[in-house]
Length: 130
Image (tube, rainbow, N blue to C red; front, side, top):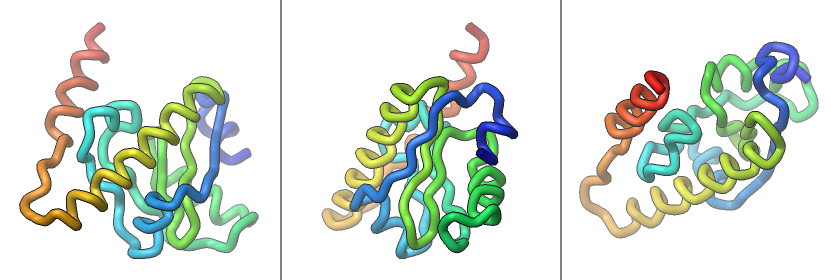
């Protein structure tokens, strides 16, 4: 409700407990921008501090931490992804889980993880220009 009230362009929202995203939520770290599909989310997925499920505070904090992005990790809980429709929110949810999984595998392999943040910003800027 908090999201729909404050972001009129949002027509769909999905909250889930996908395992790789939840792993990031329990270590209190944002999901880094590691795959190009994160252009749908605006890049790195921020983390919102823990709030009791079902409370107004959870919704308000998630909205604040999501800012104008399309996804947020709820600390110790899961993810909240939004979109222009439920189908769009589902595509974002799948991209977030894919990024979470890819980043975990990359950390296991080791070495320097390449950030896609600059590439995503460039793609978003091109899209905004039309």
